[in-house]
Length: 233
Image: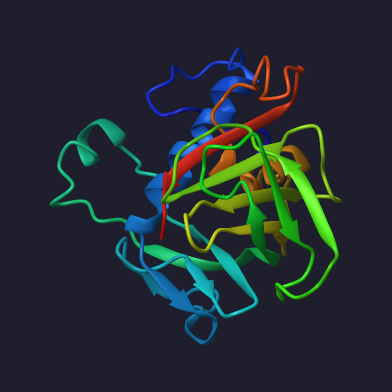
């Protein structure tokens, strides 16, 4: 896999990067409707699976995405027109992608109500430390929001993306900095089994992608930064 097609997009080789970035965010937003299992429940190669079974299995440190296989219909026009009589057998493969995220969270001391162009935060979980950091905020989203931010020109290694988040609040705002690594496909034996570094890089920052970079940020400079705003959780 070397690219992701947006939903409803005609299959072509002319899909822009903006189209892809937006598609990553949309597919990610849809993912919570899919069930998630625990790492102990991962299927073995050849295990029969239902379409309703989870394909993502997680513990507290990381998740595995398990690839499935199904036979290609011999007569697609007839078989796909009547799915009641054609039910493909779906089996688990031994191919998987491992996803891991590490985060650091810091209490915000000023600008955390969602209206400021810059925040100041303690570079420790303790509010008693004197070490402080500052960061520009892409958008004034108001209080009670989580602003996810990323810079598409920065990566932290193969398949690794940096995403930051500001949890805005009047009383208790927090700033989070996270690295997400989407690994290569384990046990891939064909070119078609592989997922490119480019796809893995964008997948790791999908929660913050919107499909276009800001032409100007709150400090008036051109950037490669993108953001998405979600209700506080």
